[in-house]
Amino acid sequence: MNIWKWLFIGLLVINAAVLAGLFIFLSGDYGELDPVDAPDGDQAEHVITLENHTVEFLLNSFLQDGADDIAVTIDEENIQLMAENEYLNMNFDTIFNLEPYIAETELIFEISNISIGRLPLSEDMAYTLIRTGADLPEGMAFSTESRALVIDKALFDEFTDLSVDVEEIDYQNNAWYFSFED
Image (tube, rainbow, N blue to C red; front, side, top):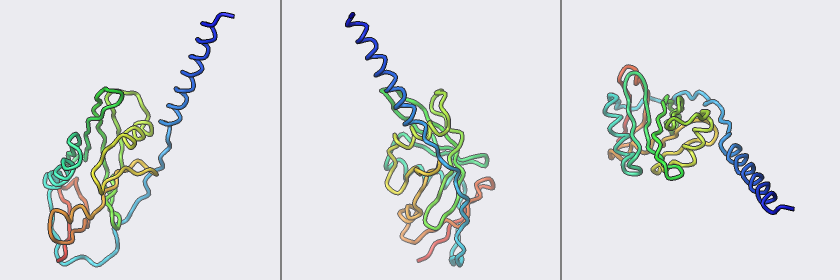
C-alpha cells in the first residue's frame, strides 16, 4: 500500500475532528435574559441624576484600569461596547449593543448585535468567542447563562466614600439615577 495515501487519510480525519471540535465549542446556546425588576426598597434620601456622558466617562475610567482596548459609548440611541481582540495573531474590532437592567446587587447589560470584524458568525458563536477571550476587570464578567455583561454595583462605590446604588436607568432621556447613603 502507498504510505502517502494513508497519511493523507489520517490528516483528513484529524482536520475533520478539529473542525468538529471547533464547531461544538463555538455553538453554545445562550438563553434569553430574564427581565429583572428594580428592587422594591425604600428610596434612599439622596438621589442624583447623571447624564449619559458622565456615566460613559465613569465606566471608561474603570475599564481603562483593567483593559486598555475596551471602550463604552452611551447616547440616547444605544449603549455600545467596543473592543479590540486578538485571535490567532489577528486583530478584530468587536462591537455590540447593550441594554441595561437593574438587579439587586448587579447591573446587567443584555448583549445584542454582536459584530466581530466581518466574520460571519451567529450571535451565540460570537458571544462565546467574546466571553472566553475577554480580559475584564474585577467586578465585571460575561454571563455563562445568557448573552449579558454583569457589573457589580459595588464598583460605583470606588468613586466615592459613600454607598452608591443605581436606582433607574433612562439613557434614552439622558438620565441615570443614583442614590447614595453615608
